Each structure stands twice: as C-alpha cells, then as structure tokens.
Length: 97
Image: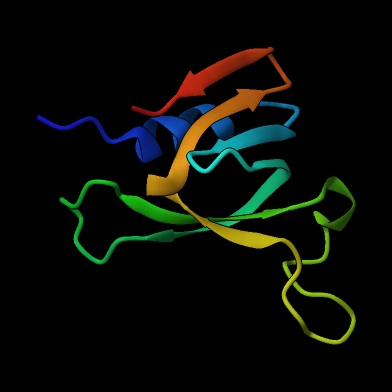
C-alpha cells in the first residue's frame, strides 16, 4: 500500500503551535512560510489525499490568501513536487520519497 505523505504532513502540521515551515521542492527551490489552505482530491481513496498546498509569508497569514486588490498572495505548490519540509516548531524534517 502506498504511503499518503500529504495526510501525515497535514496531521503533523496542524498539531504544531508554530506553523512556520521551510519547504524544499524537488527542483531545489526553497519556500518558507505558513500553510493557509489546501486542495483535496475528489476521490476519498486517492493518494495523495491533498494534492496542493497554499503557502504564504508569515506576514500575510491573516490576509486569507488575497491582497488589498483581491490578487492571490503566496503560492500554490503541488504535493508531488515536495522533497522535504522542515518544521521550525520542533526542528524536525519530514522527507517525501
């Protein structure tokens, strides 16, 4: 059975007090910020359960993903493109293989 890293990531992330993270993408790009939303797959049995994450800078966490003009802040990243996530709350790293 294939591991659903998105579900493991979701459970760990939303259990933290400090939600600042560093995401390392498979292409080498590093994104720091806070998750403010996510996209679930349509099929409850699909892996991954969460297909995309909406991540913003910490200063934008209360903006609900839009700026004063209504444009999206932050970026949407695909679950399958994440290599690892570093959690600043407990100084751990989750690797996605």
